Amino acid sequence: MDDVAAENKHQLRRLVWSIQSSYGRLNLLVAICDNWKYRDEIIDTYEAELREKGTRCDRIRIDLRQPSLKQSLQEHVEQEPELETSPAAVVTVLGADELLGLRLNQERSALEQFLFSLQWTRESLREFKLPLVLWLTPRIASQLADKAPDFWSWRGGVFEFSQPVAWAFEPERGQSQSQEQPPTSPTADPADLQQQIDELLAQDPDSPLLGSLYNDLGKALENEIRYDEAEVAYHNALNCREQQLGADHPDVANSLNNLAELYRAMRRYGEAEPLYERSLAICEQQLGADHPFMAISLNNLALLYNSMGRYGEAEPLYERAITIDEQVYGKDHPDVATDLNNMAGLYKSMGRYGEAEPLYERSLAIRKQQLGADHPDTATSLNNLAELYKSMGRYGEAEPLYMQALAILVKTLPKNHPYNKTGYSNFRHLIQSALEAGQADQLSDHLMTQEILRQLSGLE
Image 1 (cartoon, rainbow, N blue to C red):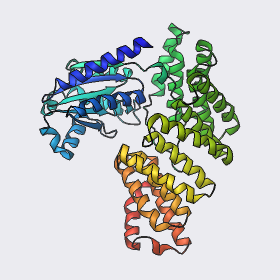
Image 2: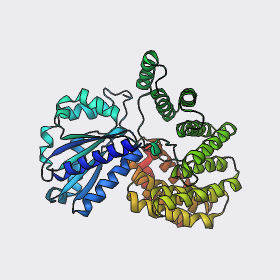
Image 3: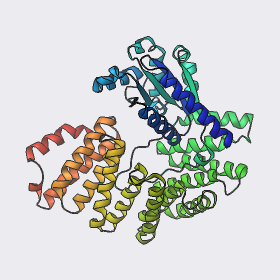
Image 4: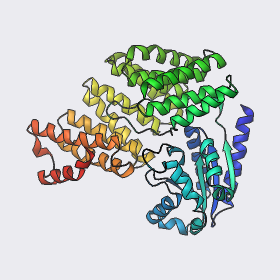
């Protein structure tokens, strides 16, 4: 563990030095990490250090619909023209690790399009005279070297970060009951993962990598709503980890949590509960009662109780999760916003609207401040607060929040994405509820509302 930490610090120093030595000229710096949450911590660290020295630190995200590094940079520079005149600036490039390898009836998958464009992008990027830190997973970095060798050979440095032991346990934090958030961690092609598993089983059936591969396969299948297959994959991951690591290892808790989350999605609550409870017990024993992953486990078990209508059992779990995250991260961290959002959802389910409102408002304020006004998580908070206002009959206050949430989702996601359809459906239900309650006068001009519905009708 000490060796890993020391090597990560060494890589971070190399990365900071490479950035500082590249001001005013284009330099491609490839950073590799297989843990998105740890990756974000590294980015926050080097950006904080550089900003103290007067460096401008921008972040861009590859457009999942048109995955081109050059296009994403051009669009960002058009919006932030002062970037080109900044004497010291760096751009961190995210989103490449979220590109799917699935072709989905297209000639090339999003990942293949991205890699193909990079192979022919090198010279056209020279107009951007600043260092670029391109974040990839090990798997995608390997594909980049293979599919875009010219671009890869042009790199100014490769910086590999290995997740510390404390980051190995990564259960998914449960989301609000009002509107699920888009997944933020990347998923891979299930067929590709199954091929890797088959090859590894043939070569080394006792490999410690099998547990992780089965776990990734479960996530990929779950993301495609192939729940029966995901259940098998998660069980295989759990069995591998129990045999290789022991029954009380944090990775076993991770597998228990993921299987429980799947059962919760399938409404198999009775099977999910003992898995959540065992995962929580392992976390407390191995990581400590105040560890941030305890907050995640507490949230997930509370969400299950909420789904089962066991509100009295859910409330103290949410309260404990909020306390842990505020102590670990501070009161304005996005994880605290998620905790507050979940607690507000519980109060809404209980009809305690007056207690839910300030929690939703605080969650929204944190996400706007920390993530930005156009982030999908901000859209979730806007939607959930609007749902609360609709339940309270405050239709006029709900309407602009629904519209803001939908505008963010339409801007950041493909038009036919299911979250856009949910936003549109919520907006229509608001109008219907107001009409049924005889409160249509609370809404904006009727003709304008109909025009909005007409423009969005393609989302149905």
